[in-house]
Length: 300
Image (tube, rainbow, N blue to C red; front, top):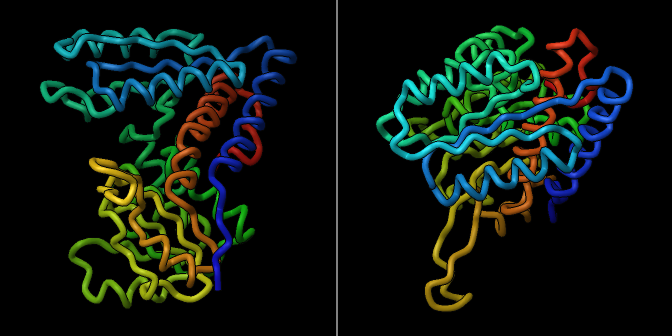
């Protein structure tokens, strides 16, 4: 068996097209342009690339993009003042503070200073609590994108056994909650899980988000299962030349693709969905702020 590839790049392009259509409607019918503000502290190269991509795609779908770049030695008080200004700006519907922050800044304090209604990353403690109790919330982008792809592939997820590998606040825990909300039977597995391979083998859906390259081999996968690989790891690739590297996921793709029914590749799987869902969350936040119907198909 060779698994169906779940093409995250194509799916993300479809989501961005849906977002652009909703933005056009908001502009034409209501005179509203959604706005996304991104705050970057310091000069981390990966963060800079990510912020540029977010800004470009925000503009491409017709939204307003606001970038606030602060020095690495910015004080906590100054950063909180920027966030508070954005909280009070009616033209800003989504706020994202790029992580990681410099070590002298308290990430939890900063994230929890964002207006929960504008917290398009879904990291605010209020949104975490709302999601955990099955209420309307802003949902973290990577789990939301994974859920969208699972729904698209399966239709109903009700009754399926799902294993989430990883218990991070950013992916593992919210992913498990989203799957529970879809009436899956959910197991969260992690480094202390006993008989991990046997636990994974019972799953109809495997979501791997542990940050360990190629940790999951094909013989852990139930034949026909759907594998969502959230991991993005860079490993040495001497076959490509001296000093060369390549990106791999948390599952061993070559062995898993022979067993699974469907699988996301790395790169080109879950990754592109993260920014697409950030844009979707911004439109959702804009609609909620203005008492309008939420965009169908772009929320959990």
